[in-house]
Every structure is written in structure tokens, then in C-alpha cells.
Image (cartoon, rainbow, N blue to C red; front, side):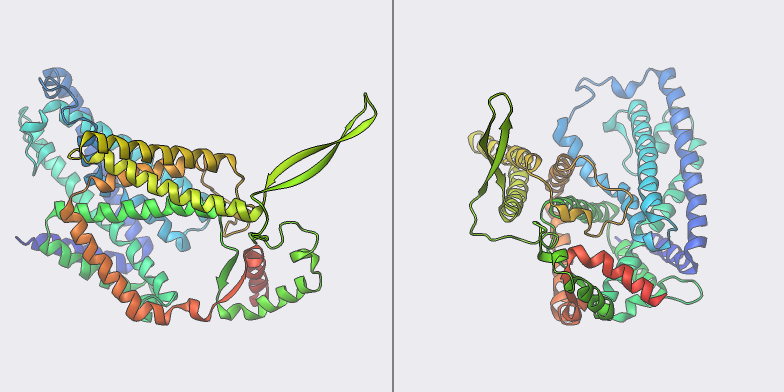
Length: 470
């Protein structure tokens, strides 16, 4: 079964995005306002009908939670694609005046508002009509029609169309920017990094994205697309959470910089070379993130003299501190075992067909690994290099390591609850991506000509290059 209307709508949205970021932002704002107005109508009118009719949808013999936690999370994994627009905001950082302040505020405010609206609409519709009596194609309009408000279908239809347009714009907008960034790094052909001089938009990347999206919308069902998009979004969020742990505890010692910054690299190297103490002198940390002699014991013995004035003596107090190299090793292995524990815990919790003894044993082992990882990462110090590795102010992730571990746990559980057919389709896309990297990106990557410098000096080199250009 094909859907030409969906493909046509994708082409219309693609053409709008090619006009310019300001014009598409205005159009998306109008569509979002219309969508929010329709949702507020559903909430207000539905609440009135619910109190008038006694909320018949909640009067079920099976109770309000008929499918339990597993059913709730399985549904959440499917509709997770509704939240992909928020992470797409980060891909437009180059077009924001103050991204360090505006992006976190925008993402947080939009996520809070939309989450509240989604929950209220769901509560109202489920209360009007029992879940088993809903029309799967038009659940909201049919819920109002069952209470004699057929005219409400027109308002809901307008809101649904504008919601589709807004979602399409939010979904297609970041992909050309991602392709452009990958092409700049040499992972894709330069075709994708070309910017239109008049609109300041990667038009070619946008058109390529629109054609690909239109083909998928033409041939695939909406439930299949929703599953694929949800997998991609959940995997991306999981990788971000793991990356936060890595950057906080085991950031890289060196970072690659383009060869075009060679003059700035040489000047900074000469500046630090004239004073070796800045890099490896009296500074016990050496270069930021650098490793020490791995032959040292796990805990270094440090003698500290403690003065006791009452008895007029100085007694040696032995203090055991974790060496830097061993701290990084422990943190790295702990992050890996935590991820393994998350997979074991979520897989055993979702696999109801496993024998009870095996299921509880695997679940317990996974829970122990996750709890052990949380305790160890909480007790050991974070790497000092986190202050200078890619951070220039603004928002930083709070509650580390608790928040990233909880994020990984929830995302992996949602991923496991998605169907096998969805994973099969995503696997095909992953194989295509691997082939593109192997046969093109690996040989054209900008990292082949990159110059690796200590992470502690990266920001200084960038500042020096900006002053040199100015």
C-alpha cells in the first residue's frame, strides 16, 4: 500500500525549508500555534464532556492500567518519535546568536510544555472512550463524535494537518545540517556541504533529505516509520548519555585539530616549550588528562605529618590516594560494566518467556552491576580535563553519574521493547552507513591530516587562531 499524499506533503515541506531558515521558522511557528490551539480545544472540550458523562473510559473491569508497566513502556517506545524535535534544536546551533544560553532554555521549555499538553490530551481522550473502543485511525475525532460533537472533527483535522507539517519540518530540518557537518569532516562527498549564498541553507542536502524521506513515506506505513525513527532517536540519546560519562571521567588526552591551524599550534607549542613547567614541570597532573606510570600500585601511599600540640610531637599519618592512571582505568572499566549491567537488567526484565530462575538471576546480576557502577563513579573523582575539553561556558549536565545512568537504563529498556521487524529495518540502514564509511568516509576523513594536540591546549589554540585571523 502506497501513500502519495504523504510524499507530496514531504516535498512541500522540503521546498519550504529550502527558502531559508527565517521563513521556515515563521511557517513552523504558525503551524505550531494552530496545533497548540487545537490541543487546547481538545483538552477543554474533552474535560467538559468527561465531567458531563462521568468519564466512562475509566470505568473498566480491567482497571486503569490493564497492560501493566510493560505495556506502558512498549507504547512509550513506539511514540517516542514525538520528542525528536527537541534534540534537532541542537543541530541549528550555528544559526543561534547565543547557543550556550538559548539552546538549553529553548529545549527545556519546549519539552516541558509539549509533555504537559501530550499527557493532558491522552488523559482526556482515554477518559472519554474506552481504549478498546477507539478508532485507531481517528481516535480523537471519533471520541468527540461518539458524544455528538461531529463538528469538532474539522478543528481536530486542522490541528492534525498542522501538527504533521510542524513535525515534518522539525524532523527534516536537522538532517541536512548533520549531513553538512559530516561532509565537512570528509565522511560524505563535498556535495552535501555546499551552502546556498542567497538563502544560507544547505539546499542540496535538504533536497536529498526530502527525496529520501518522500520515498520512505510513499512506500512504508506510519507505524513502521515511527518505530524506525524511535530506534534512531533512542540510540542517539543513549550514546549521548554514555559520552557524558566518558567525557567526565576519562576524556581523551589529545584532540585532533585541522592542519589549517598549524601556525597557531606551532605558536602555542613554542610558548609552552619555553617554559616546560607549564606542561610537565612541577604540575603533578602534567598535560590535562595525561596518564602517569601504570606500574604504580592501585593506591599510592602518601605520608602526611600531623602536628599534635598537646604532646609536642609530629606523628606520620598515612593517606592512600588513587593514582591518576589507575583512576582512569577504574572509571573506564566501570562505565563498560555499567552498560553491560543495563543491558542484562533490561533484557531480563523484558523477556517474559525466560525461565523464572534464569530471568531473576540475570536481572539480579545486571542490577548489581548497575548499582556497583553508580557507587564507584560517585566515589571516585571526575577528571580535571572535563573543565577544558570542549566546554566554553553555558549549560553542563547535572547530577553526574546518576542522571546519565538512569537515562541509559530507560532508553535501553525502550529499545528492547521495540519489535523485531523494526530492528531488522534499522539494521539494514546501519549496514548501509557502515558501507558508506568503509568505502568513502574512512579514506576521505579529515582526521587523516589532523594534528593531535593535548586537550589542555585546544581552547588556547582556537583562541590564538581567531586572533590571528582577526
